[in-house]
Image (cartoon, rainbow, N blue to C red):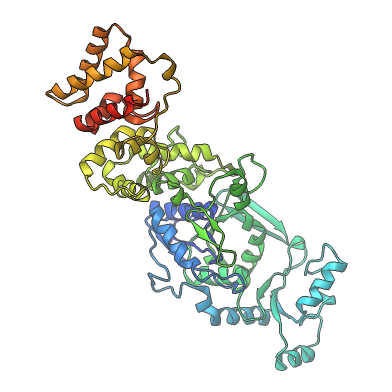
Length: 505
């Protein structure tokens, strides 16, 4: 790996839909590498496929990166000297280079219509446009110069294809996979410039990476089959000495390890695969994201970072600062990483416990607002959160774990205690109410001492009365320490709840 020049990396998504967690991981690894080497992280929007373009997708991508804490140095919204940062705005430059490739004998005009190629594919199931058949197709290699010039002059629709050489070996070094080689006989003559004048990914990515002085390219391993075309283009355009170093990242796999994780897997198994909610503009289908499910950005980033990378130790919890400090390409695995949603939830649970209450309170207030609770007593919210955060996997779990702190239970889970209920127990709680009125210092320790003293005096056992007491305050058999609940609810509310609950016992 060479670092002789300034590190400049790019994340170059297509604005066609929701941002898959694999795409976010690609952005993250680019970002970590750049920051580790004090380089630049660029967001470039690859919007050359106008048939799949979705207008709101670029804004969505930007918001995803911001939520994750991935800070962009250059982008359409933060332009630098290497712009424009949308490929659709760089359109004139692509034809120039495509025409140069034709002039130098490395590309050619292809006049075959989409219908003609479709018919060919029907008749030849394994059809691919290549050295094997290019002379039998309608292009500037099979046609005379006169015929070609006439078709161009008449404005016939055409594409420009790369002329992949026959019988050669394309070899390059990958930072993750080491030496990689491809036989050119197995590589198609890919389209470089489409009939509408827009470049394909193959031409645009090379031209733009060169123009933006990209030093290292991190992308998914699904792009490996395209690598020989890109490397040939770097060579044919005379830029071989400036070619970036490559790192093809392992796939994120389905939970069973059989194939790449997809949106369908998430739908089928009940977990998100997009960073944030995505609404399909055509179908109006809403796909839930990690953010809206209640994941903290720190947990999401942490989880993604260790999907295919580790620092060589047993450490699993990393802040962004730690990831930047420890990130190295040689610790990226070659094999794909299985996605484990239970492990993802574990990361979120750990980060909720780790996160300062003050940072969680804005989201806690939103959870309460969703349940029509408006409580701005931050001291009270802080104390409640401290009691229940160990039990929270998602921020939204706050309501399930702490709702009883904000309203008196309307029902009681008394099936387990009702059969053993008697007058002695009723009398115990009636007497407890009297004594609670007299408690001087209202805190968990004092109340627990009083409760246990009263139990001893009654001749009953603590276990017989502790669960009913919890149910009276909470409504069910759950929650943190019951005496800490008592302290936080306050004398008046505790007495009210015991009185109300006794009617049901």
